[in-house]
Amino acid sequence: MKTIDRDLHADFRVVTSPLRVSPDFVIVGEAKCGTTSMFQYIGRHSDVFPALKKEPRNFIEYPDSLAQCRRHYPTMIRKALHLAVGGSRFVAGEATAEYFANRQVPGVLSRLLPEVKIIIMLRHPSARALSDYQMFNNRGLVDESFEEIADRSIQWLSNDDVYPWLLDAGQCEHSTIRFVLRGIYAESAERWLKHFPKEQLLFICSEDFFSETAEIAKRIFRFLGLDDHHVENLGVMRKGVYERETYSSVLEKLDRFYDAHNEKLYALLGQDFGWNDAGNQPAAADRGEYDCY
Image (tube, rainbow, N blue to C red; front, side, top):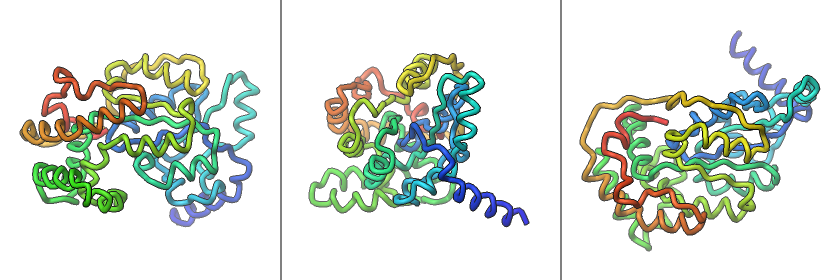
């Protein structure tokens, strides 16, 4: 009976989608960079109305259907009521971490929602790779060591002849190449910049977001055209706890591998996240053992 109710509810939302608002912003990832926390923090603003589902994956699963994409959003009646009772804005949005690296989504979003604002959260790539691995390892989806996967990935990704063939594998959710490949942010960022003007894209460094939450939140609210709203630092959402291991050696290899890719990203964005600074490297334990954001 509950399944029938869910199906009817979903069908009702699709049928009424022409009466529903489209997203004004989309947090597109990257995975393991804190999109869950950011989504929760932004949703605390009184003029923000998050999608009913945190990771709807609409623009991957329904690339040609704005009706399907709207089904997770409030109705236009609710928007009108909110504005009528004193709301200064009504801003709806979603977060799906898999969007950033997906090669099709930038074009899909720019075609369906050319005015949408895009928020991109990027984390120290070595830390992101380890966190991604830890999540898959804890779920029993990978049985190789992180060092084995990282060494093989670095070798393959450093080979110009092999590299193009790995891009398709990187699109597969359970491919182990994703752990290292997803940290080569510049190529994905370049795709987004081809489809959207820079003023519609906001790149946020994950480390800055968690160390200066209130200030970064204000920056996000201004980007969305919202009034300032104080956001307390509530810590990392969906925080994982992993068995302590020593990863210093493999993380140092990854740091060296990512240096050139980071510099390419900084040049592309005109924004330096400081990941290549010798004194700004997270400790091995801080780069994976404690987090799953």
